[in-house]
Amino acid sequence: MNAAVQQALRARSWQTAEPSALAPETSRILPSGNRMPLLGLGTWELQVHTAETVCSALELGFRMVDSSPTYHTQRGIGDAIRACGFERGDIYVITQVEPLGDTYAALHKNLLQLKLEYADLVLFHLPEVEDGGEMAWQALRRAKRDGLTHDIGVSGYSIDALEELVYRTGEMPAVNQIEWSPFGHSPRMLDFCRDNDVVIQARSPLTRAMRLNDDKVTTMAARYGKTPAQLLIRWNLQLGVVPLPKANHVQHLRENLNVFDFEIQPHDMTRLNALNEHFSVREGLPYL
Ligand SMILES: NC(=O)c1ccc[n+]([C@@H]2O[C@H](COP(=O)([O-])OP(=O)(O)OC[C@H]3O[C@@H](n4cnc5c(N)ncnc54)[C@H](OP(=O)(O)O)[C@@H]3O)[C@@H](O)[C@H]2O)c1
Image 1: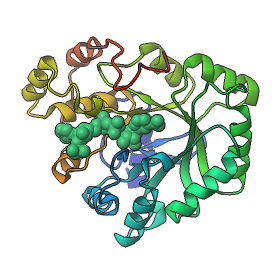
Image 2 (image 1 turned 90 degrees about the horizontal axis):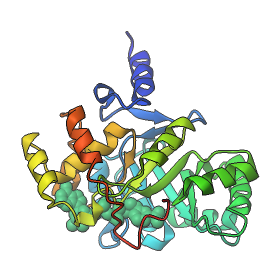
Image 3 (image 1 turned 90 degrees about the vertical axis):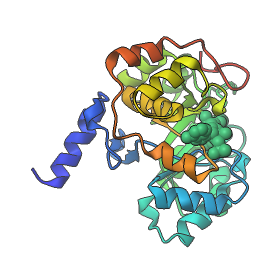
Image 4 (image 1 turned 45 degrees about the vertical axis):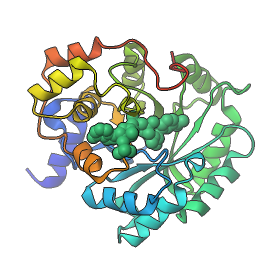
């Protein structure tokens, strides 16, 4: 079997999150036909030495970087991609805009900060705007036609908000980026996104380190010879969710990529799912 067929089969079987299909080089195929890596780097609060840290992450093997102007990391991310000698097409870049005002102009401004010609994915968040995000969507659709982004997604949307957006625009976002960990997630959202071909990207997948000392998680992680962070990342991957762990420390970056050599057994996946208490690092899970 040639490599391209193998890759296509892997990508297809990944849709059902078969653990055996998970490999560092596997990518998710979006409805647009574009590919997205299975795991990305979060960059909130990575504003100290951003370029160096992102460069280390890319050299270690990260191929996707999440950004937003509110993280103040976009300049450093763009610098890292160029300084570390990567081709633009090798790295998947996510940026974010607010749904108020001119989202086309906001995306353009982000790209200027990143010094990139396009984003792979632009997200807009806060579904509580009066029009459900319709204006933002239309402007970003224009941006997509003009080549400023390859895909459009949302952030923090509930199922009702997603349905409202589809009702108004006739289109389903490629991605919903939401807080997601064993301690705080939604089986209903998972089913909805699977049924509608929406990728869930997990923000704060490590609970901002607040729950990494949980007894059940540490005990289970030790049984697999892994750390709690690796267990949480792997749990996401096996659900078919794309985690975006942030790490300043190189040791953490290395650890967070080293999640493709073990498999959480079904009964342990069930135990991790059962930890759900709708925990949030902030003011609650806005998508519930
Ligand atoms: N769209 C939005 O509104 C939104 C909101 C929140 C988050 N996000 C995205 O999601 C990303 C991730 O979420 P987050 O930054 O809130 O938190 P997170 O990724 O859940 O946790 C980050 C924390 O975990 C620590 N850590 C990382 N790897 C570790 C490891 N292997 N072992 C032990 N500790 C480890 C980090 O430490 P060190 O840094 O010291 O290494 C940091 O303190 C953000 O950076 C951002 O890109 C988006």
